[in-house]
Length: 296
Image (tube, rainbow, N blue to C red; front, side, top):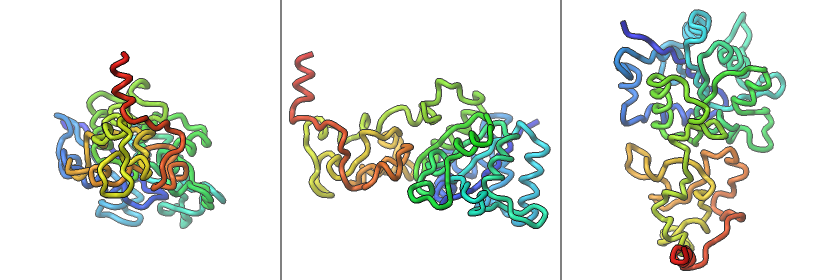
């Protein structure tokens, strides 16, 4: 008998970009993820997803609520977006109950209580992201802060990125199916899987040699490190240089644009302006890197 892993995918204050990136998964494809067995004998059952489900209205909300009621402790809740909390959370709702809107904040709290684990999909869900940037009139917060304010202690995994790479999400879900929930040492201080966020972009950047030699691009299209054009690779944790995007075709620095630090909790407010260089990173002197190597 095939075992099912129920998944509720809830969208809150966000742009749907994270849902789109999930649908762009290349290997496995989203069809493989949703239709096939992820591992022999285990199949994902996507119970609720505002973008891809065929049902709508009360029928869809009913399935979501029935899953939470009948499969307590068995389903994974994925939250895509920040959580509006100002004025009782009136700035966003998902469905109705007894003829009244149910706020996004209320849905996140209710569904988290009975979930096996919660995955915060994207930087908005992980750290607040763009919706929580000043002046933040809707009082948006990360999923972690929303759960903490409600006293909920539930396994939480952050998959930041604006949007995140589909592999980061699919790989995390597959890891849960194969090995269970990640152990504490498999997550970093910001609850990101070390398998995907364990190293700085700067460590694997193909333009790293330019940085070490102090050769910096002065305008877009130049050879050289993009640091002085605003690249945040020296402070950003992700494996974009190795994994690349669009099925491994290219990535932002490969296309000649600087990294904007979208997987970091500081994004976007403290990584902006995106096209101005960081001010707290020591620039190398030309040849110093190799001179130090020779000394050692």
